[in-house]
Image (tube, rainbow, N blue to C red):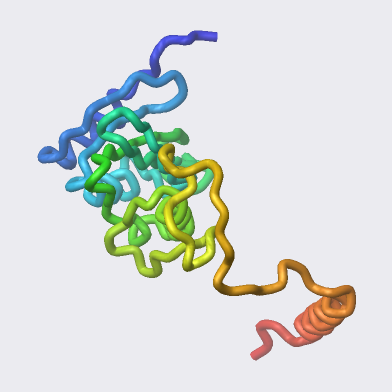
Length: 202
């Protein structure tokens, strides 16, 4: 198996021709085309990746936040997208792409890509919650894992390891046996109703 770098030129050449003002810098990679793009052209590049007939990366598989402290730029937002190929109706070949936006420690924001790939919604919220990076234009940017009143962002490398905090609000973490049984009974009744109701009748 070859350990050489994958050829990124077909994807990068198409992007550079479609978005000539964007600085798109290829990175060495052994598994998929990988590049860095500035946040000012992120949305235009993402739309091109999704919509260009030669690309058709219609599936956003993941968005990851990285704290590179003490390196600068400190943060990276890493996107993984896929074209599922002819089997999905796409005219482009099946393949994946990785691209990154690099952010300074004191300027941690990027445009939200939820309007292009709705699957980014909770992924961006998780990065906001745990790293404190802001996704400008996100429709509902709030914490998704930590309590709303939590201070700080636990995946930052300078976040204190030992921390004690009382929660300001309380809610049960599990239901009682009786509540579980009642929930199951309601779900069975609802499933039975749906199975017995006519579908598609004129």
